[in-house]
Amino acid sequence: MNPPTIRPARASDLPALLDIYNHYILTTPVTFDIEPRTLAQRQEWFAQFSQTGRYRCFVAEEAGQAVGWACSARFKDKQAYETTIESSIYLAPAAAGRGLGRRLYETLFEALRGEDIHRVFAGVTVPNDASVALHRAMGFELVGTYSEVGRKFGRFWDTALFMRDFEREFAAQ
Image (cartoon, rainbow, N blue to C red):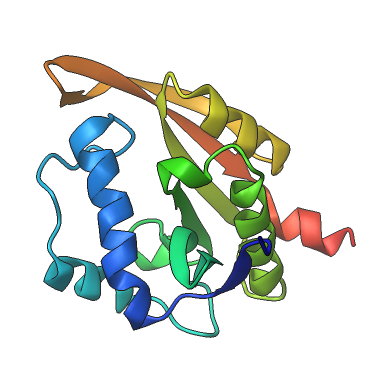
């Protein structure tokens, strides 16, 4: 079997990305969305990405099917935040544990090299040892934890906030 290909996301990937995301909505606290998303909602989400600039989306494709993605998006709406982005990553359950998350993040961050980005943030619902390990391996540092900020499946969950000093990292290279 050929190793998965990492490439820019396409609109034709949206049904597979929707299935992956809805899995996490319905079965885990990883996302604080409660109701499954529709294809129309995912199309609206996908419209924020482009082939250049700060906001990108890459997929891992295996046997012609998207099995995961990593993306960079606006951190907050206020203009002063424009050099700060938020990253997200999701893998199909069968694709986890094979290094795809790292490959996706490496591709995303390399594509963002040279963009006017100062900081990258990522929120991780905890506990989630695999996601914490991935973010630490990718140069993110824990900057704090929001205690019991999301209620899902009848309990409250914490979110750990991780940050990567993107500008300094690439200025040093």
